[in-house]
Length: 173
Image (tube, rainbow, N blue to C red; front, side):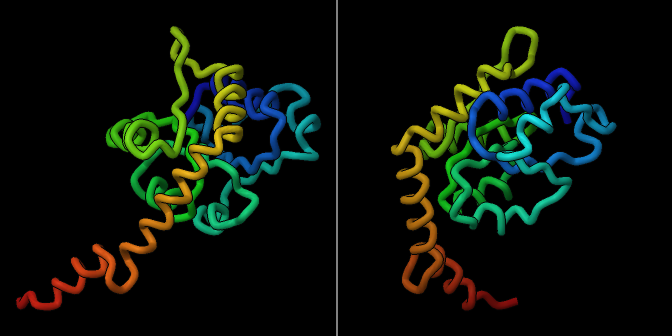
């Protein structure tokens, strides 16, 4: 959930990035009420931006045109993004999301984190800069694709996760 000011900064950051986007905007995203878009934003971004209230996240992430995932870094979203080899733009805001962000950005190196200004707002310039950095960093994409392949191998027959799951069949209740 965002303040109206933060919502505007996010919208304008997406616009300034110059990239196409799919943005899921829930009806209560701004302080539990409907958002108001910056003046002219919808018209200026209509040719390269799609805004919806809901989207099937796994289907979206699996699509070849998706080049990054703007995520709060919840565990399910993290696993889904990793499963499809999609780099992350991380914006955690509660509990385990900060820990997950550390893994995504610092350990696995498959994403970038947004930085807050002194007033607690992530600026449009920061959003623009991180989107452009993420989309121009082939190393992050390479890492994301490698992690995806490693995950697939682990669940296939003979993989570590497959073997661990198989060992459970000997348990008796």
